[in-house]
Amino acid sequence: MAGGRENPPTKQDIIDGVECFLELYKQLIVEKSAKFYDSKLLTESTVFIDADPSGSSEWEFTADETWCNINGVLHGGAYGVIFDMCTALTMQSVSRPGYWEFLAGVTRTLNISYLKAIPLGTKVRVRCQVEQHGRTMALISGWMESMDGKIKYATAEQHKVYVPAIPEYAARLEAMKNARRRERLKL
Image (cartoon, rainbow, N blue to C red; front, side, top):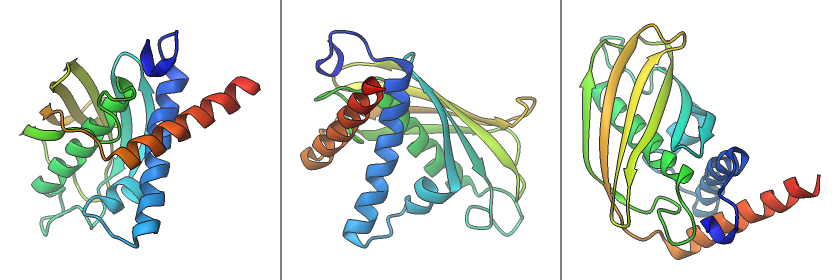
């Protein structure tokens, strides 16, 4: 029983889960009057496109000056934070109360293969896939490619170790997802 429901989550449930996460993240930034390291990435630079119960997600990202180096290409460290956050949010596709909810877990390893530089101003597609997940560990893969899928810029493999989410955040996220599900089912 996923998330207290008798039926497995639908594609729309998964999409709503990621969208609710992003909405809650924005609320937390305002409430805390904070600028977290990943704030611009999650609120401005990265656009959520799709997610699926199979454990996949899709994002768009444009390499602006914030993320590029003096050579006019995406900085190697920027690849790291982009992959780290997009793969972490992909865990929303398999999460349920008490299981990999609201950023539960920490990165154990993040291996990136840089295949081709991403020039300043280039829009790329970031795709992620949960390869395996269990009670204490998960493996998520990711890749950055051109919008037409013809160029692969980088690949990543992230190993996560489960650490419980902050209970308040997890509860707020679950309440948001439930409210959205109730609203959708009324229609």
